[in-house]
Image (cartoon, rainbow, N blue to C red; front, side, top):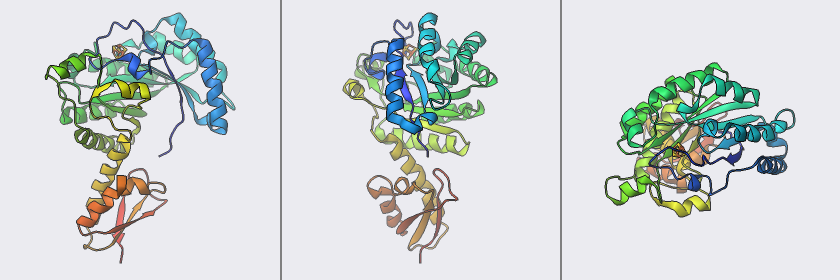
Length: 334
Ligand code: SF4
């Protein structure tokens, strides 16, 4: 799957009145101060130099979670600093992330006029009891309404979900995925909940009233979610938080792994390979995957190949240009 190289600019929502149990803005945004328009220019210049000719595929991404709820004059100054970097020989567009209850027609007109092309909503769950327990302050209805407005206004829609929040379950997360798919998002991000130091979730965890997902549980659920989204033609552009050093220091507990996505993809492919080889007689087999997907099929430290061998199917993996992301075919290898 092709990776997009965005230039991410974190815009912490200082003074956010929200009470999300999992949130520690400073940890997620690397402890950064609010960027100035000058910082935006510097980061975009640096990005252009690093990306070279690939800059035309990259987006300018204002992340932090509440872009439409920050001070309007400050927001305008950031977007105006980014605007000259759009267009021919420069960045492909601007991506912002925000809360589902901070979207209305007026703000969408403003964003459209300033070159924003994609909006991501921190929906987290489509189960209102989970949203209440997480202190989100919005409902699934807000996500549905905001998604509709964003699509109608011609933006690319991104939806972000969390797994393992208090009161959630695997079935609940799968139901969230199905309700996301009904909203026809262009992209999805999946974040297993982590217990960050200094958050309400840490207090619950220390008091014994919250148990985070184990890594195994998170990988297994993420594999199922990946299967749901990919099967519905929705691109999962991120799985698991990208941890800079600052975040790594602030994790108190939870299913963090630097290659969480690789683990989940490997699990999806092993499941598909098992189904495919089950139609063959035990013995050597050839597994066909998309070109470049061979290591994904083999799994970390070739764990998938060992599992298939244990089933009686020693396998070699071959690229097949007709296959796409996470697709697997098997043939007799004799
Ligand atoms: S996650 Fe919640 S508390 Fe944190 S910045 Fe966003 S709305 Fe505010």
